[in-house]
Amino acid sequence: MSTPSAPHIVIATRESRLALWQAEHVKALLEGLGCTVQLLGMTTQGDQILDRSLSKVGGKGLFVKELEVALHEGRADIAVHSLKDVPMDMPEGFELACVMEREDPRDAWVSAAYARLEDLPQGAVVGTSSLRRTVLLRALRPDLKIEPLRGNLDTRLRKLDEGQYAGIVLAAAGLKRLGLTDRIRHIFETTEMLPAAGQGALGIEICSHRADLRALLAPLADSVTWQRVAAERAVSRAMGGSCSMPLAAHAVMDGGVLKLQAAWGDPQGDTTLVTAASNMVASDLPAAEALGLRVAQALQQGGAH
Image (cartoon, rainbow, N blue to C red; front, side, top):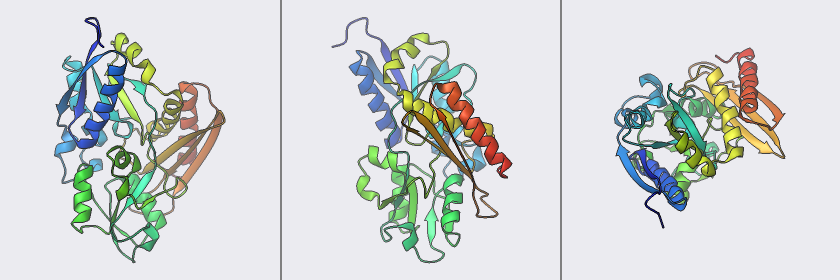
């Protein structure tokens, strides 16, 4: 039971079903630490602009800007994000205070008629607005017609059910969190389709001056996930920092060794992917970021840009 001195925390969140699930998840954990918590629901530019690909309208930072304004103005204390939506370089005055244990980072194949990607007929239409998924799909099946697919999870599933696509690719984590596992026909192994940096992980953002919140959130952090995503995000940062680029980066921890793989493709040209990988004995976040930088440099030497 909370005491009068228990911290009161306001969580800024987008209002999609998945964003609210994530905020409620953090709310429950904070209440377990004795906090009182309320949600501040917000609509972001990323939620409003649905007729164009994110890469054409300013990238995934569109999903976090309004939440950061609420933090800056003191209307909210923390913001909960899907880490793959968070720009690689945080704006001045903000920081990622906590990265939580990761859900499944892989991509899921969702289709009514086709159990797997290889079952699709020649030239079938597949939906995704991710440049990363586009280049990975083109590498697997150059014949497919990749069409944009924007909107929240429920909107994307509705568009599939209306017959606009033969199949769509979504993050497995979101489907699992919302109890929609039955929609998944196949989960792509990372050897087939390398995930996005930070995919499946939740990050909590605060204003940098809030040392009280940094301390409060420390028990929610998962150090292994944080090292993995730090390495992944460092690849993206070194490649130009945008979430909206045709880049995959995925790290695993294997017996105390951090293993990082990355892939880059050209959305318009050659369907061959540029790939790179490197390992290191796990130590701390700066070391993980250095590993990411090494892998990014290897990608660039291979022709990625």
